[in-house]
Length: 449
Ligand SMILES: NC(=O)c1ccc[n+]([C@@H]2O[C@H](COP(=O)([O-])OP(=O)(O)OC[C@H]3O[C@@H](n4cnc5c(N)ncnc54)[C@H](O)[C@@H]3O)[C@@H](O)[C@H]2O)c1
Image (cartoon, rainbow, N blue to C red; front, side, top):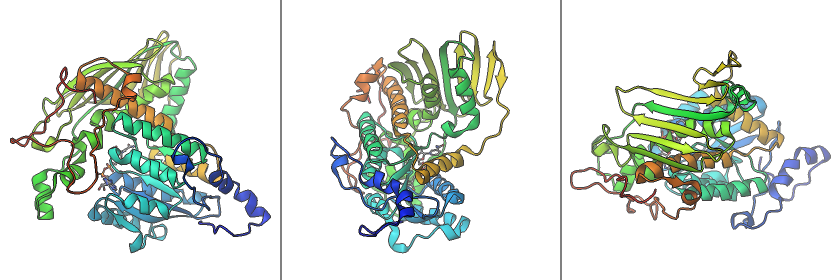
């Protein structure tokens, strides 16, 4: 895969390697990122082996690596490097993948990287990187992957604050200039029922779309309690390590569940509209899921988003047991209504129901990305990934502050929620009080993010 700088390509390989040249010699201008060197030899076609690095070896990362490797029918592919903040996470993921696809998992010990800087080293030995850590790190990892000239699959959300969104948008621009392919794990865009329903709605099946609704009301996904972690590892954890292990409950690394989870539903509505909200107001808090193990995030958010054309999206997300649950998106128009998901159904003047069967969208998104990489087709999902992430952050800014928040001000916010440095004993952005409870944002009193 890695082509030597001075090799003399024959005629056939010249055409097969067109992508090499478009990737490595693209004229790039302007940004700091684009002025940095692009490594030689980044290309792929049906005969070439694609080398993949997994960065963030948890549940989703292991799944994403498995799905990337299952694109082997498009051409040879190997997992060659893995990186994680924690060795035990890396080892578990490696064991699962090695068992599942032994011939395609060839990660030598010296290409297993651990710690905060592991991502840089893993990316260096790969052609494609899978960025599947918690979202707080995504802007840093994405920027570096693009700087190194790698194709990227990155999970949603792509950031947790506006500074991170701006960083991702800047790197996405450079990715385009360098002809690098970028997939984002908003897999509904690769799901047949969604694609067909959205197309019909955009073609006018329910007339003018006036109102949209989006929900992720469910239960708490998981919690890693400090006491259990300290028992497991037989020592006290630094605050940074604890927050990294129990990341779901810390805003800087997770973004709150409106960003981490509900982004999927908000993104579907943005996709339908072909636009992003101009402002939002909302309310939220932590009523039921409270206590020292649940960090600083809210357990419910209810947000009204306004689009430029005057239409509104009403959004709810909740992590409370025993309540009405729904993970769904809906649209209401002048000629009917639609349940975009789960039933992919249109009612009114043009009734319709999706009856097809698509592939697992988690697999499909990798099939599509690797097809684009191997065939040198345009592919960059980073911009809508970033703007849908920003939509969720806008909603969070509205519920945390209790104020009406405008997109333009929000996306330019200079408030950073990230730690100043990444070391195991570095200060965390938020600490618990003497009762073990973390301070949470107070609507009406808190700053915007
Ligand atoms: N698209 C989807 O449907 C979907 C589903 C689940 C998760 N996700 C997303 O995938 C991402 C990961 O979620 P998960 O459920 O796999 O979490 P996880 O906790 O299982 O895995 C995250 C892994 O990243 C590692 N990590 C954390 N910080 C790191 C760093 N700085 N460098 C290297 N490794 C680091 C952790 O140690 C852990 O192994 C999240 O962004 C989540 O929102 C998407």
